[in-house]
Length: 233
Ligand SMILES: [Mg+2]
Image (cartoon, rainbow, N blue to C red; front, top):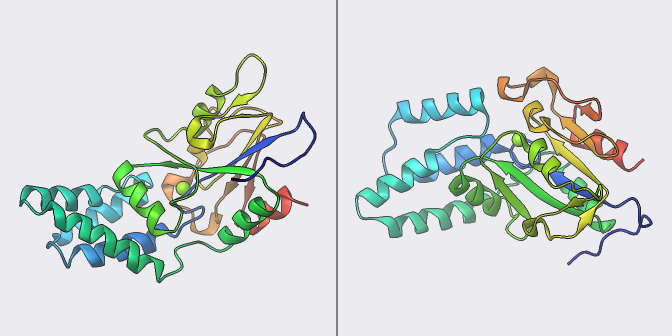
């Protein structure tokens, strides 16, 4: 268990890092999953194309994992789903599923004994599976059904001005929250300074689901390394 960093008593931070397309290569995770799932059931081509289109348009709300699991359940082969999960986790570990700068950012937070957690949006079945496949099964995480993460963060702030962190993030309080995410909508309702956001997305390759405007205390960065440099300069 990491101890909170000692910044003095009136400046404690909690770091929230997004998973899909911030820390993890979601396209690669999806490709590997589909490749393995096809060894278990035959997924119609249209289904895969629809899933891909969904990911591009809406972000990370891909539910092909549920589709595959339901398919196996319907044919009385739910034990094969556990087998598939294990194979997916095993084969994913052979790849680096993280994006450039992800390891460095988490290592930096760890070295500085900063408290952090992963806040991710999407289907819980698929999100849990991907988090495990990417090696984050021991990291504090919350899976959210709403895209507007900022509203959740704001709801933690009480009359004492402090953010009262949920148990899933280890509990305790923080004076400010720092959030790193690739989607503008994630910052909807995000609390004002001294909380701080980093909207990390390469504008040359931006997806429709990542676009939008962000509050003034949220800085756009092209890369995670850039965000880390600003944070810890
Ligand atoms: Mg994301």
